[in-house]
Amino acid sequence: MDKKNIIRSFLLLMFVAGLSCASARAGAEVPEFDSQKAFAFLVRQCEIGPRNPGSEGHRKGRDYLQATLAQYADSVRTQPFPLRFGRPEQTEEAYNIIARFQPGKKERILLCAHWDTRPWADEDPDPKNHDTPVLGANDGASGVAVLLEVARLLHKHKAPVGVDIVLFDGEDAGTSGSMNSWAQGSQYFARTLAPQDRPIFGVLIDMIGDADLVITKEANSLAAARPVVEKVWKIAQDLGCTAFKPELGSSIMDDHIPLLQIGIPCIDLIDLDYPYWHTISDTPDKCSASSLDQVGRVLVHLIYTHEGI
Image (cartoon, rainbow, N blue to C red; front, top):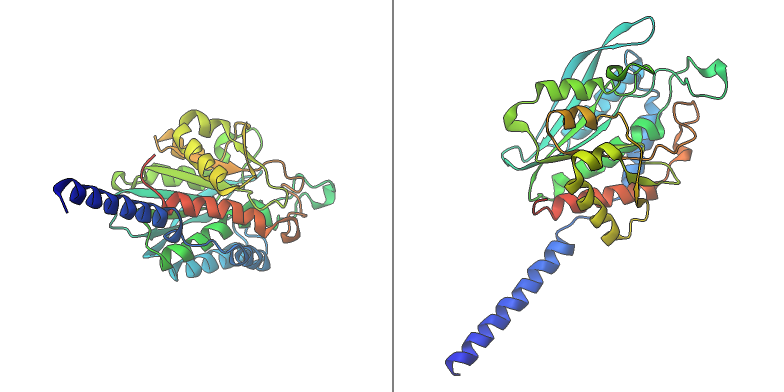
């Protein structure tokens, strides 16, 4: 074989090998998100009852989430902080729950959701229910459920990037007209985050279990973290996740705002068009495993195909 043919053969082999590696990155190395397991995590949280701060359900919910994440993560810790809420104002100890995967990796992605539930069903159509705590199947349990399933996959399949899962407390005890009364766990986390623990970007998921799921591009996310938004929506499009719509959505005060304020590009995946929001009817039967599946698959592909934004 002459020299030119040898070179051609070598280049052909390299090309085929490259295709094989690309195929593996695109498919085989991305684990499969199990929507049924995720939905079971949602139901289990609701079986505990409302997880509003200061309640027995709050204590049991914290113990359950910490114990579940401890099965999967390299390290799990709680981050206590004083939560001030209500009128008249009361103070309860609240707890962010922080799970780390491959803590030795410097390049890290932050995934987060809030685990607490609304202390009062103040949007319920029946005024008699306005002092009743909310079960929070969608508003609380759905985002956490997806992240617990992601944690299970991260334990079984090493990712190319470090991942931190943070479950924020004290998100849903706010008062209308008082901006800082919302997202108190995220505020505390952002104030105390060590420079060496800063992620390259973050994704917050909130109220993503609605059976009729529609996720638009939240305005604050698009303004401050457009590359992350575009990356996530490109993955959703490639996967055929039709709940992700290209339209611009509302500007929302949520747990991503304190992170944006300290320069972390964090986006919010949220569907606010939910008729059972802050009512006693926010129960598992209003949620869908297929909705969890769309969000979960996008997050898993975001992690395991990570090559930079």
